[in-house]
Image (tube, rainbow over all chains, first blue to last red; front, top):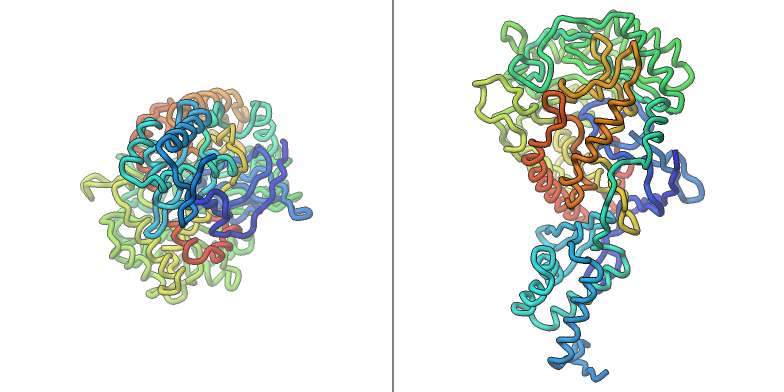
Length: 78
Length: 530
């Protein structure tokens, strides 16, 4: 499976100037490449996520497996 | 160029210059959008205007004039939209809005119309197959079909059509052992593995659970192994609670709220409420786990009708009435499955007809967020995972060329549900007529996964999803998409508008929270849903 290098953004800023009257929120997990293997999941409510070292569900569903020099290696969560 | 500038630095344009400016903007949009419109959603909070761009997953705030112009551009012919805008707003507003739109398209790669041709996580089936053979994470065992309760909203009641009826079969050791062997053989690349016990009421077949734990520990000792169980709690004794604690079980126990709410639906064969028995079981668990109960013991609540904010207030009072119940414990609350409530109890049972859970939870969560309310476990359990989904969404710098397969898992990877007779299902929630994906005797049926769950599903969702702004946010999955064993998208006609409306509200709520304190949501990067 291909692993994509992704910069994990750990801050949320409300505004970042871009267009004169349109401002892009500085939030989310910024990706620098194509995400492969990332599967969003409508996770089973109430079922068994805490036992796993993976990302939360009902969400973008990817989480760093490890972090090196400020970048994170992402892999399939579930 | 012969431009004059007014006091507020806007150039003064004569008619000819205006026409040229309009023409340039039109040409720009036509060249960028090529006859189609971007997948984007305009939404508002009480104080600001926003744009969600599906191509990149970016959220942007904008000035009102830009919102209005985009609203027209998305819903009308481009030329007509501009003409309509100019007939109602000043030239300076047009300059400002068109300039901003042009600028953000160029600098942020948003509001583009990149045609998505493909859905799915991978390009080739071999990549899926590799995962299916090596990365199974959770084995979910239906230990028995029996249950000692007859809850009025149970999906296994005879009148509920999406699942099997209450049955009398139990899983035998041979089936369980083969299933655990399958987990061992197909989890070579998994970092962790888990076995969960499901029913019926799984504790009706407790001896099998004990055997499974002993066997799994003996053959799956090379990586972290966890156990979990979903139980109504009424059969939990001190001895069973000690067993769970000793083996680090996560326990999901069903209690719907204070006694009168719980007992309204959760009854035994004779129609007696089960609150006292369930609470006694829960107490046994807390006594056994002691300080280690956090993150191990969770509540499962069903929010049953008649729905109202008063009912939700009353449900949240469980923590006041049961003083030893930790306020920080995680819980999951959901509506009954549509069609599952016993006929005659209530005329409405569809969860999409009631919004009180989402609205009430957000109001409570918001009040706490701005420091005007108190922590509310029920409200947090609804709102936090939804907001976390946006906080943790992947934001791309360029439009994606491939969208994920809705909220679908990869069958046979994240979890595998094994029924009492050893049949493999995608998960315990899927419609019982959905095609099975193998069994403990012959193994996984790769062809069914390829043909139905990937190829046919992908082909079928294309008309629904390829032009939908919510494509990267919606959480629909295989769960309710089968009827009589075949893919059936009829309920999407009902589901999709409701999901999109819900997501629009969610986006608005998320931005309202950010407006109050964007840093305060950072903790949700590490949020893990129960």
